[in-house]
Every structure is written in structure tokens, then in C-alpha cells.
Length: 96
Image 1: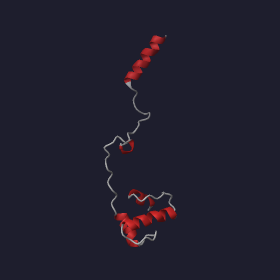
Image 2 (image 1 turned 45 degrees about the horizontal axis):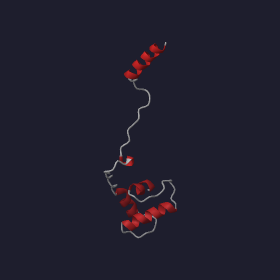
Image 3 (image 1 turned 60 degrees about the horizontal axis):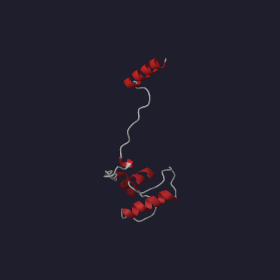
Image 4 (image 1 turned 45 degrees about the vertical axis):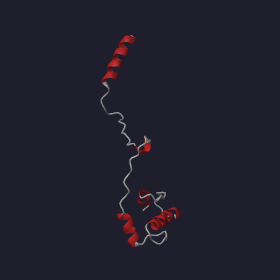
């Protein structure tokens, strides 16, 4: 529930424990959806929470790195760069 609430913009620390922070997030969700604020889900509310679509991420016009997709960094296991290999060989020959 905590991850789902977070995904919908109702911040709750994802601890896996049903605590005061979680109940407060549920109350904010309930208030925003017109339900009485109890801090606990009934079956109807739980089903509504699970079926609610997550908001789409909005693209930012700024160059904010948080909105920029992260590139995967390839580490090892790939072929070496031919320029590096040739440079290393030539450099090694010229040093002797």
C-alpha cells in the first residue's frame, strides 16, 4: 500500500509496517477522493486504490537531471577500444 500511495503522490515511507505515517497518507488519499478520513481502508477503498491509474510522468522543459533517463554504464566484459590498444602499443614501443 505504501508504494502505491507514493506512486499516486501521497507520500508514505515504504517500510512495510502499518504505522502513523502510513495512516496519515491514507487519510490524505481518502480526503482527496471524498471518503471519510479514518486512516484505514475498507474493502471498497482498497479496491479503488489498487485500480486507480498512476499519473503519467510529465516531461520537463528544463534540463533537470531527475527528468532525464539514466544511461546504463557498461563495465567490463566488452571489447577494448581499438584506439586505446594501438595507442598503448605505440606508446610502449616508443618508451623503450
